[in-house]
Image 1: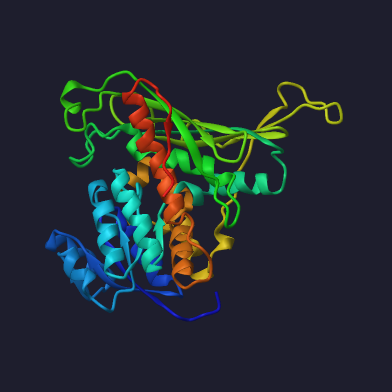
Image 2: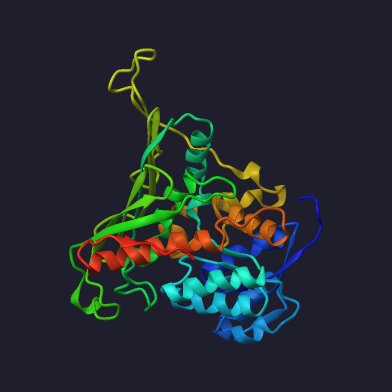
Length: 381
């Protein structure tokens, strides 16, 4: 991007959200003009640290400020839908952490508002910018995987001790981290791969005191969904409570020539399996091999490349960062793509309809689980 035009951004929610402030501050096409948090003392603490003059405890007041071009929403999950809707109505571009919303009605309204206003909406999905995904995508684009035969995602996380809107949350309501790479891999510019139908089963049971808030009893939910226009299906598994498992956010691609499998345990390397052929005979022990995944900072403007690496993280002890293994160096990639979309240099990825589909997979999957695995058609907005 050669333009020196700057997008004036407000960051909303300063727990996990504060991690993005220094990235915006160093990006050549961004300016942080405001921050927003309900707790004034914590708001001032963050704003003082980064030298940000405009501070809002009221989101509604922030949206009235004509000096703000875009909002980056990092609020609690129940606020994502309403805050995105309000921002689009106020004429702001929107970046929002996952999931897009928790109801079909809110998701539909966001998509319709984005189309009507022409403003950018982008769900800030970390996995499709993580170095492991980018590596698998590179293998696919080079033809090394061959024909994709099957896709699998898994996101297992212990949410005990997290804020009070988490206990009892249906696992599939927060499924985009494992759904998104399955669909993103088969997407092409201007032609996103979208899920069509989903069937899901719940397994096990969470503690009784966690069940009533969302009327969701399942410890684990596992879904299988079709991908429109292809003969490929994908399987995703989610858990949030009462499951003994180190954090795992993973994505596997089964190909006809090679297959990519995300590492099972934090600190390991992924595995690539190579098909045995007469032209290149391999022993069974040679078929799998550990691979070192490179960093993809070279895809970014030089001033923000350092943010793919852990030493640049400002809030590295935040649970979302620790449990997510640093989110795979994705934060500067997300920031850059959003800013370039606002400036018209490239489309947002994921854009509003794509974000809707990725989120609706989980919402419809939970409906299916409550109905004993009945197949559910994913609506297209």
